[in-house]
Length: 295
Length: 300
Image (cartoon, rainbow over all chains, first blue to last red; front, side, top):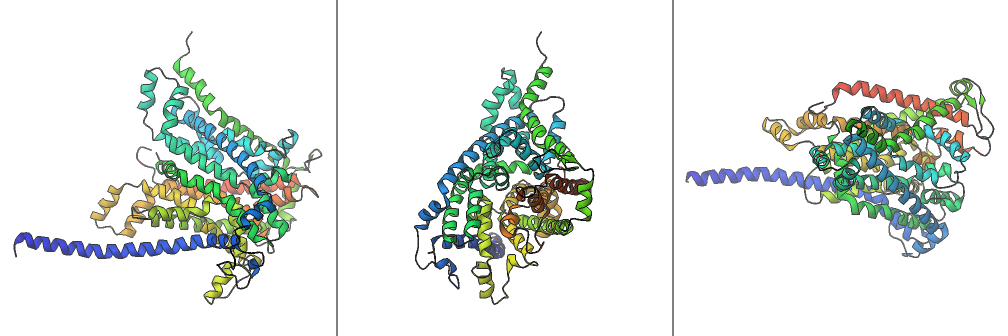
């Protein structure tokens, strides 16, 4: 055997001994992920199954995954029963407005705190990030009273207005991301005569797309899901948002119309899902800013 | 006279951050000051508050039959749910931190429960836990394991809520994943060459490097655990007995749910302050304990 062939044979056997455990570990990884995925998805499959069942079938024993008859009409009758479309409209109004508020204000504050040098900015940043840890419940009672006095109770103002003042967690996220953008960009723009507002709108807004999309997704999800604030601030059922309306339906019906409820629930779930899928890439990038937290 | 750049930047800087300053005053400072005052009053929210000094706190600590059970359950909840969700989130993040075909699909599936509205998810789980018609007992029956009353059993209700929390741990996973991906490959490779095994590399390199993220997650998780509300409001209403009557839910009940019949806003505010002081103490202690154990990155 020539030296070259020998080294080739050795090389091949090394590759083989490395490849076999590699294959095994990859198979094990797929098995593990498959198992986890099934346990994550099982409750949701169950939800779809209930949503498709007939009135009698939801109390069938033992419960079956496959409905006896597929009642697609639940997706029409359920929403009609629950008054879904009015709830949906209310929720869309509240969610869209508060998301706009959160994105615009958090990005402006984030720019100011990380790109403009002024005395006191460290202190303000410390105060803002510190307030992340003040429990929201502290504000609930005084703010409810304030809104009552201002005649704003039972309106959507208490659900929308706070977003326009920059949520501390979003300001924090924006600031982390801004830290990763090189300084010379602003410096050369300044030399060219650009002011801060111009640098912010022309340079930073396009550059920070991942972070404002992340903020948008997170605040959309928060407003879409919020249950406690509408519970405290709204009384008129005509103004209810989806979480409140759905919960109210469930406690009224005591679970006897679970198929209607679940069908409507599936519609309730669609907008945040679609949004997440559309913006997933930016979302991951935006969260990546948290990876540079120490710097 | 032209303004100096420094002067102009100061004014502009405060303009840019003014929403946050107003927000802090309006939604943090104002509620804190007024609620501290109200916690020393008897107040129904309709007629003027009556100063009663420490009466609310005295009643809370000595006479309220539900306060101590509620506090005990809250502490228990924080102690079990915070490590459980952090570990589950970290484990999932490690699992999906590979560049391998299909990994994005799994990431999405694991994140899915977080995208879904909490009320939708919780009512789904309420049905899953139904002792007769629910999926949970069906699976136990199928595996020939003893079934449970789930939310109806005082010993099982809290762990049942925890299962829902672990199921929707995708948000924690995503943040850990972002941290794991920021750990440079070269360091891992160098350690591999030096003969460090996977476990050693994880504990000695990865964990210290994601220390800051770990801290942030710990703080957020504790804050969230102390304020757990939706799960209790929708799944158990604090029962059975006081087994899931978390402080946050009790405050809501005392201050808002009984609003029409007997509003006790002053009293509920005193409870808020007890919760607030506990959260702050725990946060400060955690920050102190971990101050020197976290990798701060170069340069700081």
